Length: 268
Image 1: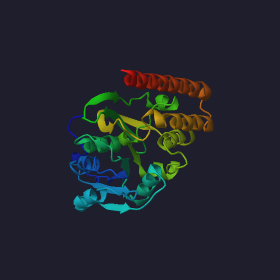
Image 2 (image 1 turned 90 degrees about the horizontal axis):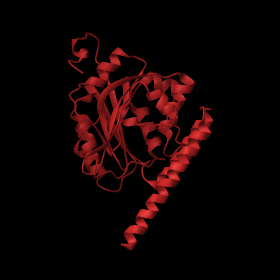
Image 3 (image 1 turned 45 degrees about the vertical axis):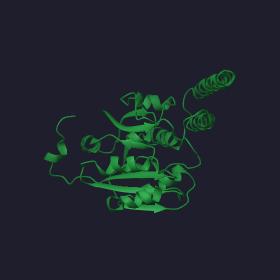
């Protein structure tokens, strides 16, 4: 992106608030924390919301607590409830959310803030790399000017790559935790449909998401489809029924193929 412009600006640097929600994340949390605190952008507020972990998560948080602005550990009602708690604790002008299975690209905050300063009152979105357990990129999701059309058709709502101005949360509201898996999708649809929220895009990898997220795997996929279908219907998105049926058919095909694979492996 070239030399960042905020370094030449006389205006105060905006505070960037980052939230991490975690529950029993001892295997991956440290990488997430390091991806935040090793950024060179100088005005970061980092908040961790732990859901009363029973493994070594708290020890990892305490290891870096001098670099963490605030952290709490208490039971919650799910990941979106934890995110909402985190948003409520922030004081920054721009807010990002990265969970404990994911991590940010090095030095990406400088570019995020640079784009934000040129696009006030817009959400900032960038590209997402899907990685396996070995850290190898297996898929890239590019967010561009077609993002709004993609999300309206049920495309992935990848919150690790999205940074939201505080005033937009004040207008749109928080995540609806009645949705256990697709509340980030509902939030973006609500913002686009009801409040005409706009996005500015950065053509860089912003974050890396581990393939084993909450909505991945066939066990959770059916619930995701049900929630997305409900959201499409709630906001009267055109062709919601057709898109929902398409996704259900894809789900059934994947489930069938998965069962066939298991049977073949057991018989070999």
